[in-house]
Image 1: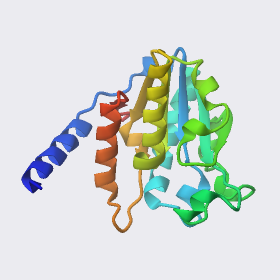
Image 2 (image 1 turned 135 degrees about the vertical axis):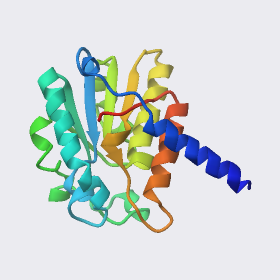
Image 3 (image 1 turned 120 degrees about the vertical axis):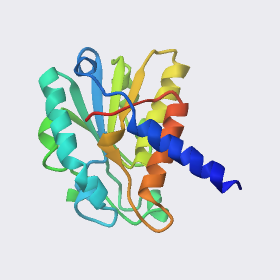
Length: 210
């Protein structure tokens, strides 16, 4: 492997992300919806998968959702909500078991949410009623965690579904309103960059909010 080439590509990705255009106030109006993904207690404040990086996104996300609410944007939450015998627990530690506080949207964001969609997999696309809901919009803005897992799967899957249905759906991810976790073999900064690259290649529009 040519590591100099890899380094140059990463530096190019960093530059691209740093110079993305801003999401405009006008893009919050009209047939626009915001989905905040897994900004719940089990990923931010308590439990086996809680990450300080996710918790750190709460203030900016709350300010963004307040602006969206003022603009009349519909705001939805998607939260992990697993049965105790969830098959996903073979890959991840038990988390967000239904009936526990881990499934609940963090208190700073919950006042803005008009509806919550529970999901039992990393991909929100398979949550009940998600696709009928998205069909009613021209633009879907996705925020939350984790960039390289739940955000990427939902954003890329939603764009692919829209293409299949021949719907001109604008799928948007503000890069400064999502993050992933740090861990062994999982460098958050690298995973963020790789996820942004893959989303952009799939037709997801990357922007900055602030």
